[in-house]
Length: 78
Image 1 (cartoon, rainbow, N blue to C red):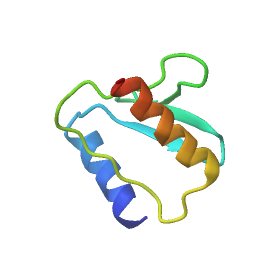
Image 2 (image 1 turned 45 degrees about the vertical axis):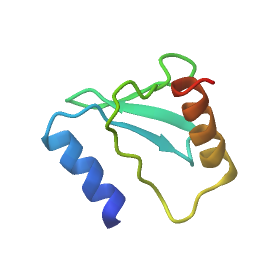
Image 3 (image 1 turned 120 degrees about the horizontal axis):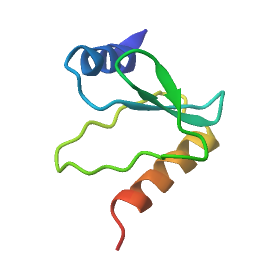
Image 4 (image 1 turned 135 degrees about the vertical axis):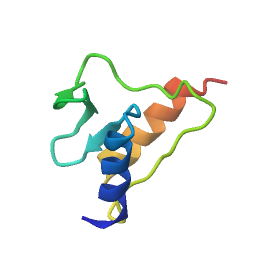
């Protein structure tokens, strides 16, 4: 539903690495090619490629904002 969903589906179709943060479940998930795998407490996503897409909801919750902040801190340390 909406542009974010279409973007995620396109990434799946093109076999691109795909991670999503589910605000309701307060957890990151990775698309493995067959299913969504939970990354809570384990392999959290890190941006490793100079070209990436970040997209999301219009209704960002505090835990979603925190997840984005932590992703950027892990990916782009000072």
